[in-house]
Length: 130
Image (tube, rainbow, N blue to C red; front, top):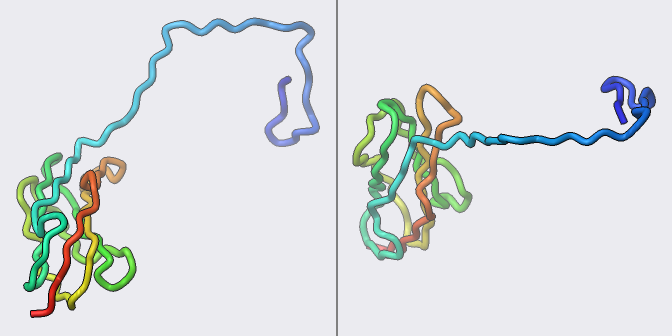
């Protein structure tokens, strides 16, 4: 059945059936050249100090990275580092109260927003009162 895209009531059937054979099919999947690994605070750790998220990122020469977490009670971007180079990144300091926290980091190629990555897993840590 062939159908008019602008008017679905306008269609026609072919006079006879046809067989379509497709060979040499290949697919291309765009994969990101960005890789993120979390470093500190260590997964499932306990600390009595402020959080200083450290992550390693590889990829293109200019990246925009954001540390995400439930630090305010909702899953949000909390620290953003723009136009950084690949390597080990000390994202800054988050002053947190006592609690159980989940965090991750998302980095995006600064010149191609479709090339991005999260660290493979969310990490957790517990902040004790000081």
